[in-house]
Image (cartoon, one colour):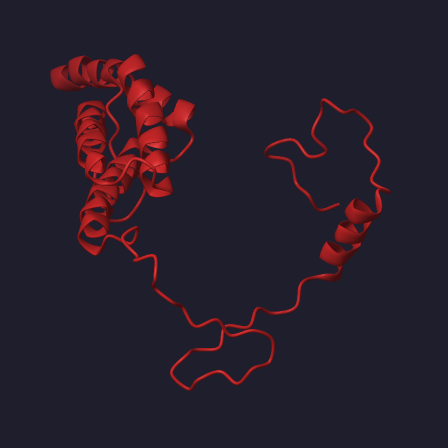
Length: 174
């Protein structure tokens, strides 16, 4: 009885998350520190990728942003809210996966394609070799073509130039 009266309010003040609500994803009590270390390690390891590569630029950009948010906020809930990319435990998994991918990218070096490398290009309805899988996208909805026609013909009218037609989070269907 005594422990319930003392421990429960202390637990509520500490804001200790009991579960992530995701099967197989355990709560990480020191998630902020783990994220900061992972993001710092990511920024170090990405330096092995050439500076002019888009992959490196993208990884550095979002990792620096996430690192700065983690350094500015002490509370995991605020980190989750500001980043808007899920729970901190999910962010940890993403950061670990990114570190693995950086290792693979450094091994594979997809940016090291020789200038004289020739790639077979198949255009139109030319016969496709049997070893090449056919990837034919399905038809686009009629709404797409109507929108495309409106945009390309210049018939698109906007009510307010500074305000987006659809705000973030609004439903697009009527």
